Image (cartoon, one colour):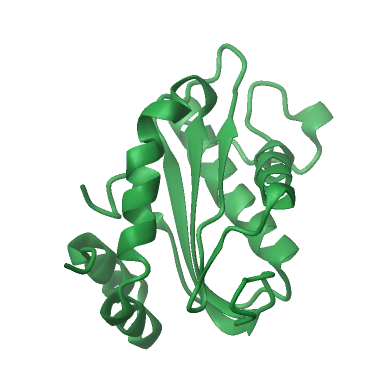
Length: 177
């Protein structure tokens, strides 16, 4: 297993500014919706913010609502300045979503994320799972958590100076021990 298994390079963001947890989840939702729409419509139709005009496409609001709903159950911060927001996503026919999709954000500025260690978050690895298959990915979610609590990995991710650097670190990252 690798942290890049379900992470497209286009969904890795370096030194990005968000002002809050809500804004971070909105950015994650926008990136996932864009990737899902590219998968479902190779002509790369634009992602609309208005879902009523967005028939046949994934609306970022749907992705955000699921992430936010999960976050309301309890913070997904892992401590040490890292968060692992995750949620299930169900799409109606004819939209296609059969494996998880992830986003990684290296933040320009740390944000409050309601972490139990009270530390602000500056690294976010977010993942959405297909609702019908979410149970089979529980081990993968646990693996992500193990890798992202490796202090060497976190140090390298914080020092990364480009999307490509982040990708390489995530591609080779392993849990301690």
